[in-house]
Image (cartoon, rainbow, N blue to C red):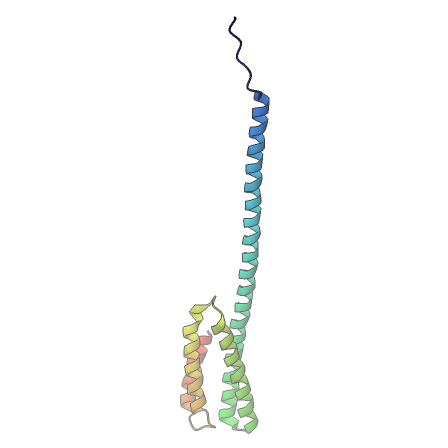
Length: 151
């Protein structure tokens, strides 16, 4: 008997290369799919951060406007002393407090909380000293401090 020639394994080189290419293509497809999902999540997060930043900026601008309104009406009440001015002052003070609460409730701007606490103290000081011409100097000092915070 003559030694027989080695038997082929049944897979040609062409089949092995083709199978390897398929495995590589599947891996690349999975990696691309993961990358696309990551980019979509990053885009969503960017949109949320942008919306949050715009909302926070709007609230801070609103806070500055309301500080000015409170100061103006408190000074008018200190000079005029009319019940109507007192009502307008209280309405504007309540609007300022609501804006301050909205900013305090946001967890993305904790750095404003100390300034808001100081502003609350100043508002209380103005409220306690707010009477027509009686404590105008003490209220004036609180107004000056409140303006410094608004800056």
